[in-house]
Image (cartoon, rainbow, N blue to C red; front, side, top):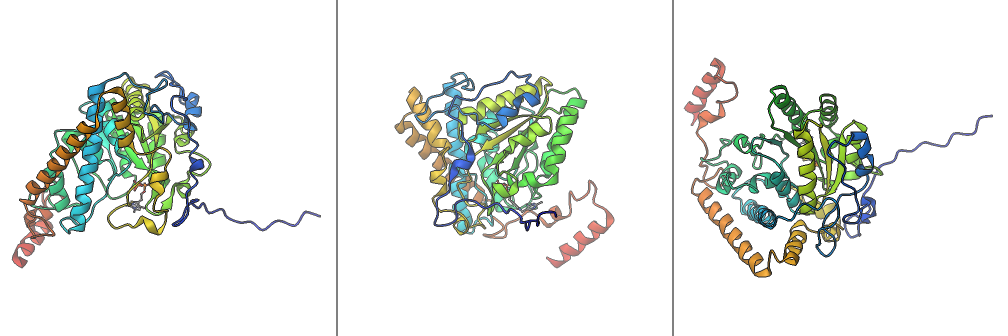
Length: 415
Ligand SMILES: Cc1ncc(C[n+]2csc(CCOP(=O)(O)OP(=O)(O)O)c2C)c(N)n1
């Protein structure tokens, strides 16, 4: 007689820490700084399998750069990097406040994730194209050619908004700065980045693409399609997965991170993969350079899982104290990216507390001045000072068709 079958049950992943509890971060499986090998640039994807389950780290607990991934010492570049992270954080803090003051309708910070976009930006070349999510403002703020006031005009949907008031705040678009238009639909940019990289190769160009996605959004089908196309055509693209542990209120385990890694998806798809400490500026810089160089030399795509923690709320519409411990970020074992690079540079004699204070003050003043400048152009929420009504109908098609011209005529009559 066959044995009586056991009743089946489903497994529903849960985070270990809920409000009032402490998270058990052992699930992260960290490697000590300097412990993970650095493969040759032409490593086969299959040979990177171990790197998908370990963690590339450079900065140790006291801020020394150790191991094969430590980039060559470049004090000027690292000082620029620290300033870029501080600028990103100062910008975020001011915009969060501006949302609370009803100057803008919505905002999303990248608190705790500043190292990833800013260090990555330093590894790219002019003309490369990033396909960001809404949490890579650091890509723009690491540069000096996109004025902060202009970003704020976008957030305010005011008369100087480069997006002409058509987009939700944060959904920037800067073709000239290699920053593809952000879309509200998660993951769509991941496959578009691969297509852009394929086009670059078809044209015989030398530019590469950098695709961005969060841990939660990897569950979207576009993520998997992107990996297949990147692998099949060996597209010159870096596939960045920012694993900040959360997708709004859902823990990374329920997006498929339990007992495996997002980097492992790369290896499974025939793509070289790295899993990297996203709060370690030096590791981000070094791994980004490795992946960029592979792409440039036609050695194929690289998938990088950046391990980090979303220290802030998902957005200004979110209250994380409802679903996770209030002090979770302070206990995240990879610490804070700004504090860690500051410690490193101070230790090297390339930074001081005095300088930190001065830079902080200067950045706060710069952000405040930019806000004043942006406010001179009004705002949708404060005074209804918005782009003209025509802009609502333009750009839907290259040329405005008759039915939209008619709707524009009617709209003009209404106002
Ligand atoms: C296709 C689609 N589904 C759902 C949403 C709603 N949504 C916006 S952000 C988000 C969470 C994304 O989390 P993750 O990819 O981990 O990125 P993070 O916000 O943590 O940076 C969701 C579900 C959306 N914008 N698009």
